[in-house]
Image 1: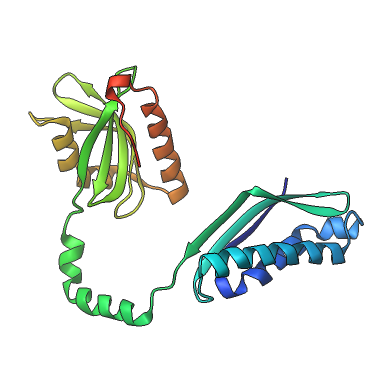
Image 2: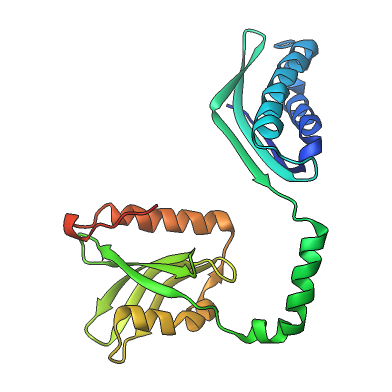
Length: 231
């Protein structure tokens, strides 16, 4: 089943991008007369009308904002059938120039200090899986900072099987020993963040999300008394 993907596009130009993508994807179908160009134009116009309602009327997206849209569809009996249950709409709002300038004016003089300062993570124990692994949730302030699946080795090390840190950039952590030295697991992980970042592998946001989803799925195996709830 084909998928219409606009990629990141200025909101004011989404309709044109949708039209171009669909016509490009269906060029062979039009050539083989499985659907005619006027019908394609009609269905694209209908979709764009719906997207206008979503983006402009309801979400109040400014034409200078950016959006990324995708939807599955199929061609059947000379018509385009949109699969609205697959519709994905992402909106990236434009920050006014004045606000950007104010932030830069305040922070540029502190650039060296900010770059040298370590990222302040907090580490929270989430639970233990049925096979004995420990799950830890990491935060930076109130933001999600990552997740780690680890297993204690005696009282000397915590062996990180897999995990991901999200700040300052998504970084995969895998098969790393963290020395305990009398500290709690949470304390040892927190104090080892910079070392973990240095030994980790930068990954794309999509891979980071996949790792987080995997480790969270392991939380489904946590014994009932150890379960936690996420927002």
